[in-house]
Length: 301
Image 1 (tube, rainbow, N blue to C red):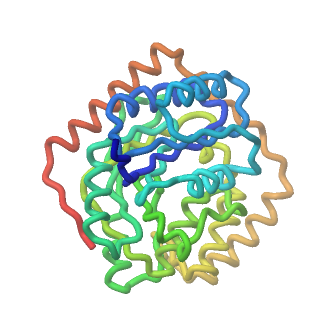
Image 2: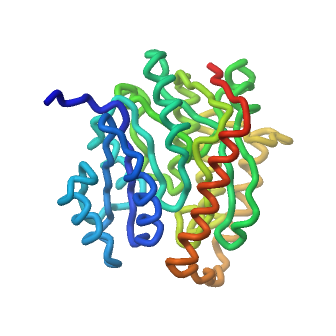
């Protein structure tokens, strides 16, 4: 039997998110192609995730799996990037929704254009607390400004990101110093003038959920990391009303004051039960599919 080379690696990093993981893999496993692999890095979960994933590995339904403690999210994702064997790598966030056919279109476009390092797209977004509210978002205007040389760098969410494995040696892995690792990564790769294609369709639907990385990031931390990005990557921000230096001075003053004040603990909403969660996500998958099937989209590079 001829063994196919892996063209696409789906990488997943997770910890104690079993209900979301079951939804994600339940949808992915039914459509997986022979030239694709699933790589899962678990951060030593204690909610049944380890047994669930080990059973999938033993049944040859997923291809690579490890479970061990990691230092932070970036550390876990870097493990997955280094384990991936595919020519193209697609990060799948466990609580988001992903349109596999659109992801494959992006993969195919990258395979046909060997100079491309990355591909991003528009995407949809929602919040688990308000699943009936879905909106369109994207970074096309920022991408065009960057391509035109108007800005040195811009940000994008890696929920839609596809990476060429061979480009990791130049663009690097995620920076383990950053909580908002995708934000720093986007600034870095655009500052380094990576070859990026933009697809005007929607390869993912981002779902804000309790317990994800964004919900756990304090305003102080985000401002601190934002200041680093402004200086290191000549980042003007999306609404640059005042100079970067002026904003940095304002940020330093405000942050110094706020760090002296203890933050009140934040209470998170209770997650829906498994049946309700599956119902919500089934609706999300249907919505994402409808958006991709009712429009005309193209690649820009």
